[in-house]
Image (tube, rainbow, N blue to C red; front, side, top):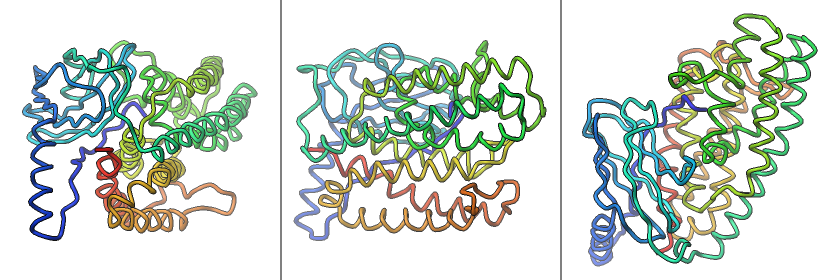
Length: 379
């Protein structure tokens, strides 16, 4: 969703047990830190330490030296998102680990997390491709693209049924089909967001609108159905537009740029989205179907992790063990709220204490998940 505000995460290096290995690790860490592209973000500037660097694995170290929460994006042509980190608080730091191909890009800092951002052009040099990768990671990327396509394909008939109910003026049926129409999207949202222009049209909340932006998509219809209890010509037009916009997303999956690190970062972004939108009740504030989105986000994050696990577990067995345990715990917690018909408890019925339990579970998973991208980097 365009209004989500993700928590910043720092990718850490696995500590080693022996003093000799620790010394080697320290040297490797020092080299990684020295090679990192540093971004100093303020309220008025976006300073990038190097505007030219080689293709392949790139570590971007971000320091927010301003007074506002910021986000940092790397954009390719057409504002296609290559990698990002949101919700970087004043005085805090974050690290992005990404695979970037040769080409021209823009680094954008967005103080206050609004607008097009303060931008700096960068050039990534090389033969047009990222560094060679483990064939298991290549297979994981291919499998994840298939998964994303499957989710997009499954979304279309679900959203068409939702739109048909709206066009028939059937308020209650439209309400019942709202959450199911979002499941595939929520599972594969990082891929959808990478295009830059799809998410703002389909999944923006009212508080996430940019100046002059027309409000369209699921959440505008959600407000009409629940808060206004109305289906008029405007809603019917919006429903048809939603179908068309999602079909556009469906067709573009084959061209999405997916890497092992973008899969790992995307998994973390899905958990951040849960933490900042679903757990707070902000995402589906009118329908209170937040737990359905929550579950789909967790499923999408787990899928990305499971595809990357063969490499991640080999490099960091303890991390994989922790992620296995934390994913199981959060899915067990969610299962307690799943109804016989497959829907979830309305989020306005979830107590503050229960929300705190959800928040703790998300944070417990999010911290180790933030290390996944570093664990699949080929060095």
